[in-house]
Each structure stands twice: as C-alpha cells, then as structure tokens.
Length: 339
Image (cartoon, rainbow, N blue to C red):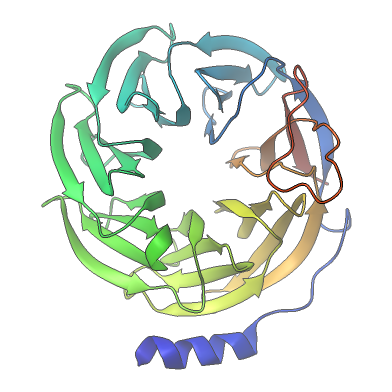
C-alpha cells in the first residue's frame, strides 16, 4: 500500500521541463576511434590514473583520457560486460559472460593474474572498498558472486530473486544495492553477512537497468525501461521523485560535485541530464543528443566528462525489427564535456 500511494504522488510530480538538444550544460567533444568488430557493454573510469576501460566483445580496450587515444588492451575476456577497478589494490576485474568467470588483471601491466569462477553469465561488476570485495551480478544465475579482491578467492554466492542488473556499493552503510530487472525491485545485500537484507519495490518504475548513488544525500538514481529516472531513499527504499527520460535506458551515473544525474538512452540517441535540486526534487536540465545505439556510458567526476560507446549501423529494410547490423571498423567512444 505504501508504494501504491507513493507511486500516485510521484506521477503527479514528474517534471516536464528541461532544455532540449544541445542547449544546457553539456556539448559534444572529441570522438575516440577504436575500430574492430563485436558488441560492447559497460565503460569504467579510473579518474586518478586517467584511464577509461571499454568492454568490447572479447577484450577490454584501455584509453588515456588526457590524450584521448587507445593505449592498451586486456585480451581473453569472452563476452565481457564490465570492468571493476580496485585502484587501492592496483587490480582490475572483468566479468566474462560467455565463460562464467571473472578475470583479475594488474592495472599497471594489464597482465592476467588469475581467473575466478562465478555464477552463470556474470554481467555488472563492482568493487566494494570497505571490505575489499568484488561483486559480479550473474544474470542467468540469478545470484551475486563475492570475490576477495586480494586473494582472488570466492567468499560467497548470494541467491537473488530475479535477474540482477547494475548495482552500487554503500560502504558506510555496509550495503550493496542491486537492481532486479525482472522484478521491478531493488534487493539490498548486507556486506557483512553476504545475505539479502531487504527487497524494495521501485513502482512506478519498471525493468530498472542503470543505478547511481549520491552518498551525501543517501539517494539512489535508477534508470527504468518505462522512460523514468527515479530518485530513491537508500535508507528506506522510498521512491522520492521521478523525471521522464528517453527510450532504451541503459546506464545511469551521478556527479557528486555538480549534482547532475545522467541516463543514456540508446534507442532515442540521447542522454537525459537532471539536477538534484534537493534530496526531494530532481529536475531535467538537458536532453543531450548523442548517437542512436549509444546506450552505455561512464562519467569522469574529476573532469565531468561523459563517455559513450557507439558505432555506425547499416540501413535496415522497412519493417525490419531488432538491432541493425553494425558497420565493421566504426566502433568508437563519444565524449561530451561541460561548457
């Protein structure tokens, strides 16, 4: 009942204002060519090292964000989805969906240290610095694998009630928040016990994908397939506010300095930029035009630059359904900067 009442109230509050196109705080910057072929998923940023890690089918491309060029490659990551960075340990962790493993690599040399077995189809991956643990969100396995980032040993496998998508760590609260896409819910993991401590409905949101976190105000930002970005109280799970976003939401990020939250909307070819006016109000300030299919994104909080993976597509016949075929050699990273 509580969530039903909250949903009704939030729908009345959905913001409809916002600057369109290239008006607003962000504008297009340089494009970084990568080339090759194959799909992609998450991008990850290491601000201090000025490195961007881009998943690309069977390997992870490493980009120097100061020079805007490719400077390295991490091979043998079949079906890679994401890359988690443990900068304090000098290690990186990839989720290799096709082999049900995570690769552990040395961030300086990019050489493989070891591979670790996970649940089925590891997808999103994150580093929880409070306990120095890595969590893989196993899509088909409906579980989370917890890896000791120093020893490389699996310390827990946590059953989840549905298909996990992205997640965020809250080390101060001892929690990991996980979007459960097919349940329209968030499950909260206690990092001390490695057990699910709570399940929260995200109504009126549906099929959540991206998640971001503002630890200062204890607010989660959730990108939903029904074209909403939710602002949720991370202490109680209460949905506080909602704003409209574009079609095909995938990634969600938050900049703690500017208080801007972002969703990348692949089908619309846009990024929705919203400002956290207060812990109870979110306002759309820009609908940034990107490229059709540019669905995954990363934010560098030190420069405020956002990065999106993109490619060109071959024309589709009239009435054709499904994702069009990518043009080989056109894979690249788009950059957008504050004015």
